[in-house]
Image (cartoon, rainbow, N blue to C red; front, side, top):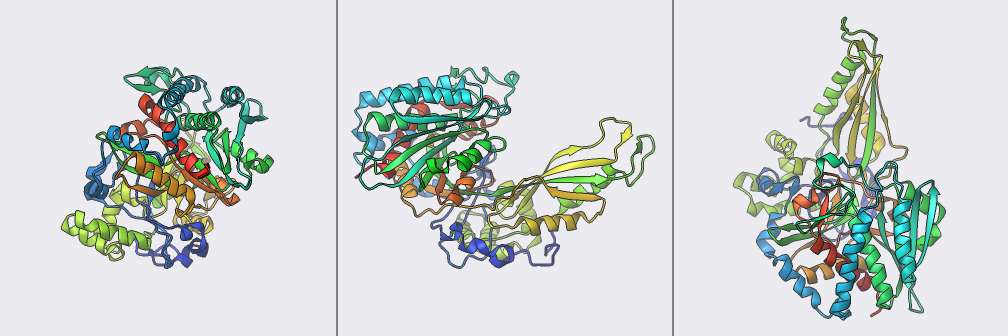
Length: 551
């Protein structure tokens, strides 16, 4: 790995080397440690924005020795296993009956009715095919509207394109002086699925061995349904509210995000100057019947998708030429793939790794205690490169994802192309990064341009808020002794679109999931345990009531 970037700067960057804005951003205002977690779909790094000495952007995680905690792409936090010893999930749930939780005031029989409704409605919801493309989310919006109308909850469906719709609903505050609203955000579209690889049809809503199967069972019809049940609970229980609770179901999250963009562009007023937003994300990892941690997403890395095109002399496949477009492309891609983006260490990561050092073998412990020195060592750099759970946390990443060229085997095309999925750390300016990639390519006949119509600098929400405290408090009641940790993910969510509006947006799930269950998101046999469907709305209700309920 080279010791410097193409522009000659040292790879251990200072904050002002990247983007001075990051030190004054919401990330710098955030407090508390962000625990490093990686999942199959979403990945996370660690930062402590409360440190006024923020100098560089990045993250770190225990390396090869922690691979024993890596199953299906999830790096578990072993230190918490050693410290906290959480109770089994069934025993943990007993604590949720404590009087300080709003749900404790609901009679058991009525609570059972809400759980029954959650299961019934989830079956119906999963049977609505909202595969994107084309989406057809109006079907799901109509499903929501029917229930909301029956419950007497104010709602509007906005069909902004044929078959594509957003739904807005609201339960107003009951106090004379209200605080700013909280939004429960979900998306109704789902990704594609191949029925031939599923045990049951992906839109059957079938229950097998205690789990309900269907595309969207993890992403994110489960949470959208839980949010709907919470709205019904708030209405039926006549919960006294000191802020509006807004339910917002949008279209097209899995593709271009047109639903959220349309809502913000045309009905910003209906968001009511909201203070908080709960969206998909987070992770409550269940292992051996125990909840190991409750992860709350506070921010995301940002995608910068690049399109590379090589130009060359076309011809017959029987007469090779070294400067053909495919050959130029392969040489350029090889240089990009071999390029190592700079390692960047955040001060809080130094502290985190020092804390982890006692749990590591001697050599790794020494590296973790002196991480800034370690990243200068070639052997450690090689370890980082091989450790998927550590590599993407310490740098901007580049993945080759698509290739294209001739449509016939015997034709050398004039052009050949490739797509690169780049994920930038928060605060990174895409222009210098793009310039560095072009410098690495170093071929006038190969162009590299962004695919993104616009680039959103990654953002984050603080952890010293009423909502984050409520999530922590409620989660600790349901799962005593389990750490509640903020995360920064490498995946994208629409929280990035709402934070610039002054809304503190978080990814939080009221459900627990095993690694295997979590890995079905976007995969085959996507499913959720029925017991989670029954409990999840109750957990979310307690969070919402804690934030929006009067005291």
